[in-house]
Amino acid sequence: MRIALGAVAAVAYAVLLLAPLAVIVYSVSPGAALEIPPSGASLRWYAGLADQPRLISGLFTSLLLGAIATGAALVTGVPAALALTRGSLPGREAFLAVLLSPLSLPGLVLGLGVLTSAAVLANATGIRTAGTLLPLVAAHLLITIPWVVRSVAASLESTDPALEDQARSLGAGPFATLFLVTLPSARAGIVAGAVSAFVISFGNFALSLLLASGRTVTLPVAIYETVDRYQDPTVAAVSTLTIAAAVGAAVLTDRISGPLKTRDSSARSGQPAGPAALEPNR
Amino acid sequence: MDRSRRRVAGLLLLPALLVVAVVAAAPIGLLFRVALYPPGPVAPLTGGPELDSFAGLLGAPYPSVALRTLRLSLLTTVLVTLLGFPVALFLSRSRGLSRRIQTLLIVSPLLMSVVVRAYGWMLILGRQGFVGETLAALSLPRVGLLHTEAAVLLALTESFLPFMILALAASLDRIDPDLLAAARGLGASSARTFFAVVVPLTLPGFVAGASFVLVGSLSAYAIPALLGGSAARTFVMEIYELVTISFDWPTAAAASIVLLLFASALLGGAALLSRRRSARTFGT
Image (cartoon, rainbow over all chains, first blue to last red; front, side, top):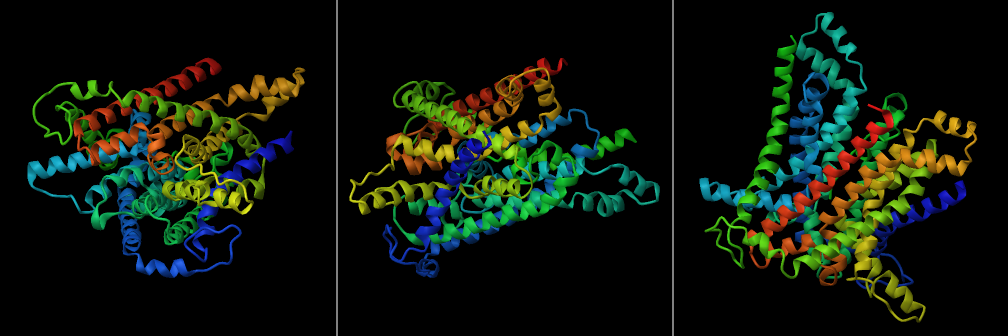
């Protein structure tokens, strides 16, 4: 029985590995055409990235967008997580559902809504946001906040509020308690939430497609537009870099949440803390 | 004390709620309004309000495209469940390093852009891709699977498999081992224990995973556009072309509203189902 399950699991894991592997192999191919069997390996397409202004600009746009969205998601999401876990609010579940709802909305539809709103805003007030990062930042903020909220709330829930009461009774003010006791104890959740938020923003495609134009074209959109038309291993090279970053982020969140998992409640539920515990959208 | 604590909590919650209101609720409300303008190529967004754009969705090509989209989503959900359940069982029975490595294998793809993974499938399935070139090297006829529904189905299955594995594994991990021991102690065979105890207890995970996969694959754009193209047009691809090619914003907005309502109904139904189910199981 266990062997049969293991065999199915092995097939499934192999399927999950196939697509990224194909990109990596093509990125080191010596020529533009794919060869079976390969006649050698070369890093020329990585060097060739320098001559691809669209991909380079996309890379920097995505890095900038991811950094801004993550920062903004932390500023809005961490207080929200605090309110939800420590605020003794009525209707807590409903608020959480509202904050997480953007994750189950179709990305392209949301993008169309934001695009329409930007057009209406420009008509009504003359404030033109087309061609700026603003619509993209707003849209990415919407889908990164849920990751921060869930990760930080899970972390706060697994720490003991009695610790904060003790700090208060020892004479610490509310702010000292917050910054010296509460937030440090949720450190793992904050870091994991920030990593997830950045990764989600960096890789998002559906939401960005209608909002990105000219200088604000993000890397996934630039990759999409290139692979739809040309066979070019340079795209495979830049894609390989993002694959490496994704694996790095996965290892990082495992390192953060792994040790944590063995002593807090997430071990009981068996769900890996960090990105896997959440439900990302496409 | 309690009231002031609540007031502070409300203030802390406000910015995040405002983002949802301004960037999600208001734009969706606006789409409702845009859908009420008279539809047509390069629609001027004046006149109305009327429901012609919704009525237009009943004519070609939308019903057949909607059916194909629905079929692809259902098939994806079935395949992901059939493949995901054994994997989730294996994962939930693994411990230590093996479990950590498996989790890494499942989570890493989720952190990669869907465009990059769709690109990988293009490289594998194309006529000049890995499959085509391998066939040619073996002097077999070159077959290209790109731009077929099968290619879309394969890539959708791969991209949603991790979600289903994680959802089912979460349910499996919550099963109390004493329950299984009790079933065995009462004389149930291991097959009976599996079907009468384990499978029903994974239903919440299945409902959560399946509704997410259904809605997610209905809303997918990159995979059908890159791997299916004109051979497997989906509802979201139609919306995109209405916006960028025919500039028919009222019809695009109407189609978006239909998709949103359908997705919300699915998710709402799933939530209701799991609530009623847990009420019955635990007698609350």
